[in-house]
Length: 68
Image (cartoon, rainbow, N blue to C red; front, side, top):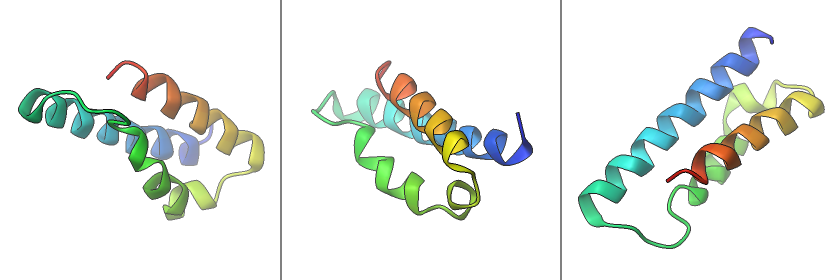
């Protein structure tokens, strides 16, 4: 796993923590966390990855947001 993938996954972890914090503070809502996918796709770290690495990060993103 490259350092760029690890950076992208750390970004996903931050998004997950933010979504959990919002859930605890305001309660559950539909699409909680998933609305951050655009921010992930627009990030410079994500753009520098190869397609297969981007798919790996997206899979990780959906797995994490599914836990919220």
